[in-house]
Length: 374
Image (cartoon, rainbow, N blue to C red; front, side, top):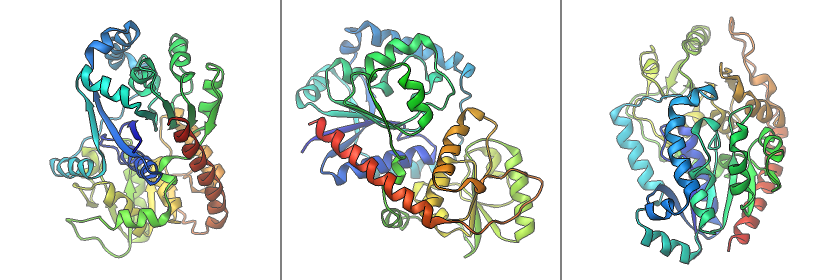
């Protein structure tokens, strides 16, 4: 069986990143491949034999201190209970691969394992000089590489990285990106054609996600009718709005917290939630409040009433605008936070027609690209 390894943020605390990696893993497995998730690359002699790789890893350390010029990272704070369950989720859903020696790396090279990079903001310039998420190690080993739904999360990238972008991306079998803005940005830098594809979570059907959500387990009591809140950014304004919405509707608010501030809110807090509960809570909610792209994507999957609170980090507006415009969901954005007005009429028939087309096109891209890698 042909082996494929994904290089992505599969073990982050962010639910969206984990679910992207989960969905991509499932989609590739359905096509008959043995799928791994790259945990670490420690073939140090191989790295030392390529000066550009050494430079990239040194630059990354520096970028951790200077990257705020382009991007302010969001530190996620999770409870010990949730960490235990998230670690179990990783073991249950990913076949982790640590390339711990040069001998092991040589064996993988001999097997011609394919590598795929994807997806959310893995090419963010704040991460520093292009390296692991551009599959530099695999490119130098002449292994088949491609990307699926990779994105930048920035309005620009430094010109000093252009040479590395060309070196790695022009070596890929195919490049699939999530946003038109990424197509436009990288088309000015590299020669390789880029293809816009859907987020990995949209590759799977509602039935797939129903089966996934059935694995949810709760340690708190949840009413039959509730409002689900999930916020990526640490922003008190979101909670002020949530309190206003609760006062106007009288519904229970259920929260999957990403920050300690979230856990202090006077709502039902699920401290030990995993991606299973994340998907299930969207599936069963009366409606949803969020600042998260993936919460919007799953609200589309389950045809849910949702309301998007925009982040202060405007560099990410493009991904929201493109998603909402494509599926006719522009009115789901909250423009005035001084009041709450329910908008229950959503043309999900139109949205699903577009999603079907996008999913079929993206699955074709993925299938054909994997065949090129064989």
